[in-house]
Length: 143
Image (tube, rainbow, N blue to C red; front, side, top):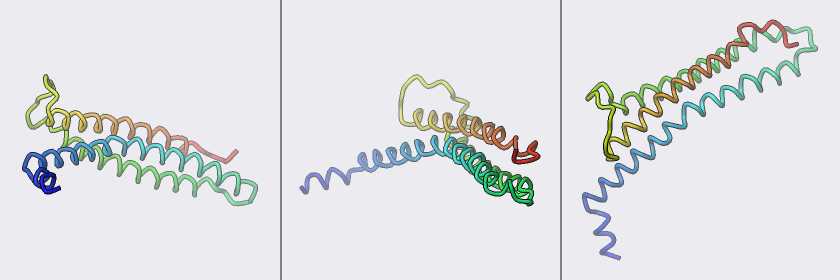
């Protein structure tokens, strides 16, 4: 038991645990932008459908409220995606060394690749959020 505790306390094991924690956070970073887009999609279309089904027969015009709601959700989703893009851009670290060709799969290269992938997914998710929000601009009635 003591040998195992001594093994865990070595500098190599601490460095390995630190690298694993960085990679795990990078994997979460990759999923966050598409998740923000998916939640935005569900809230925008599902919320509009539910709101129109409930308030459309009334004499109340629901369109301005829906536009404001979708605009608020869109701003929130774009803020989350923008933050993820900024963090992943810093992780990618391309402008620091202009090194985009990695011959070996070392820890730094994997870390930069995950940042690159998260940055590209953030761009795609931002475009998708904008396209999901566009029908709210042209919406006139719930019917």
